[in-house]
Length: 239
Image (tube, rainbow, N blue to C red; front, side, top):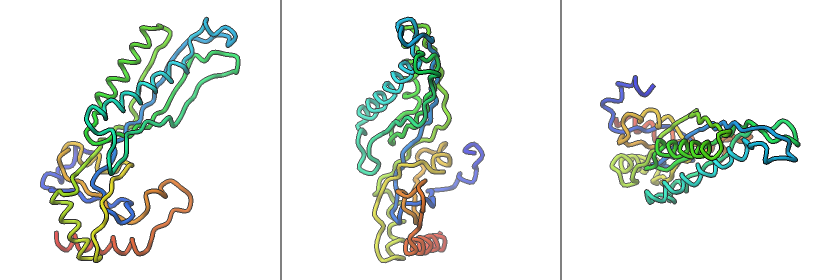
């Protein structure tokens, strides 16, 4: 999609309707979904030294992912962000083992990694693959594949950027008060639309509380809904 968007050639800024609870989001985390598959060598659990646990190998690699993520963030001076919080790496799936008394010879781990603006997904992936190679050198039975299922870039904009200032002025005129500034922890279409234009200013604004995302009984404040509609209407009128 991002290779077929000539319409963005003359675009000065992007404003994307996302649930921000009526606040103006000027930053969003990046996202990297990894599936790490590790092969080992099965054995009787009473004699674990005769086998090679794929689970232990996989967990060692997830530890490397988290350490590399924090090191990368600290090196860039972004280990903590006032709008986005810190980077995260969550195990969202794990498949391994066939019996209580058997050393598992296969393990698959799913990781959901969220990064801050300024972080390098390519560098993080290189670190993981280096660790997988080191694991194999330690014991050839450990064989690893690392698959990338999703790769969305992080985006960040100064709250003082002219695009943000213009939006705040319009919202203040329409609603009587400027929206609060926030960051967005989930990824949006912006990570695709701005992929080939990383300097393109991106703003997110809309009704709906992000804290309710993917939870039962989601709802939207009618006041936020009508305010957001009025702000968008005024933006369309002006531009």
